[in-house]
Image 1: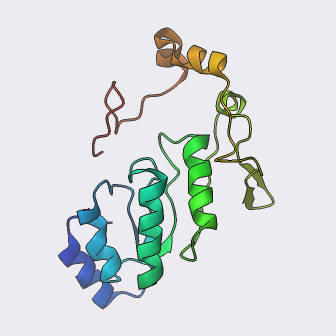
Image 2 (image 1 turned 90 degrees about the vertical axis):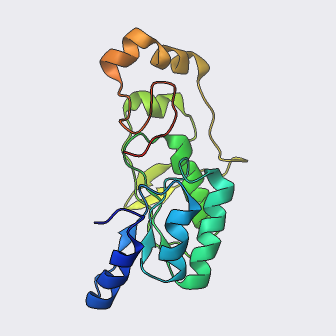
Length: 170
């Protein structure tokens, strides 16, 4: 609804509306989410694990949310992958701030690429019991996916990343 830097407008929305607010898909900096969480201006934080600084930083965000009654709803759309999804599930399992987990439907090539990915069944997302994130990677399939000719035709480059993979605000 609003960009992260418009904290004053979130305050106004909170005063006028009881509808739960979710924000965070654009968060890439603590200065953007700290006031929204600590002032309880949002109900759900929606940071993407890979853009929010990885598992360690996501865990810190979740811990902050626990203190202020904000729930997590880790973002899974766009240029996501099974690795980010498994990272989100692990942070969910370690936090009492867990609210909801967005699920992303991956292409068959992506599922084949990452043995051990999460399984969606009956409305629940199940992780495996392997150590770490529980994922492996099929290197040969990954190399084929990264082939510039094939990637340009069958895969997509997210609009919030440069060709070198650097994250930019959408």
